[in-house]
Length: 303
Image (spheres, helix red, strand yellow):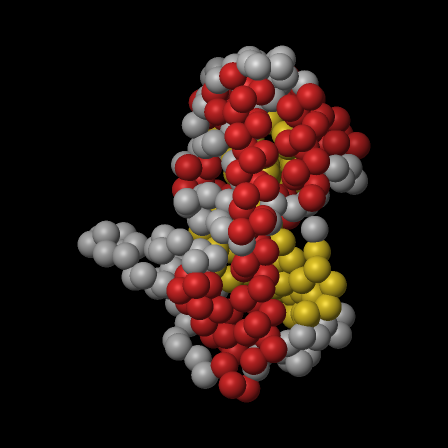
């Protein structure tokens, strides 16, 4: 669901409103611990005083200041992507309306920048709402609570997304080697753009729309997890290793840290098609989550 929800009276669900508002604050201002550890570890790989070392140091200072002052990690607070699991029978329409109100409030108090504009007129709506903003992906499950994951994906890294159709005359055939070459080509084309070091979410298969959507879902995984599929786990590791030998480095300044991670999933495809979809995420890898009880109260904070 991507249409903007109407203004909603939150009096019936004040706890849910506050939970979502706090989720937005944490997502926008506090980089998850697994990402912070990856950035910190990357700096140890760079030569002291090098451009890459300086870039990663500035990133580290940015992370600390944003957390300490509850300020957005980046001036581009990005596309607002909610991934929501709900019990059967849960009112998803009401959730969307209340969450949209929380987005409006988060923008008003400064957790989010005014980032949503009309695609024809360029007029800023001023509150991050409008057709397609925020974005909601609803899924049902049989658990007795709601799980909400939020991702904020900036425009710079979104511009570096890429999609390939195999076979490709320069990249190879419909096999893992062709897939690997396609992913590495996406890294090469991004160069210093997209605010690297980057994190890649990749989907092998699907159609053009579901491929991109599932590639972004891979970015909900933690940095240090291991793919359940050993072939894909090996491919993830190989892509990161080769990308980090490219010399592109943080922000394209050179160095050993071009990628922090690569997360790959697969979906069935039609025999006539073989797509490789790459969702590029910047170092400001903003994703958080929370479990919510039926009264809207926060339970466990995720990531």
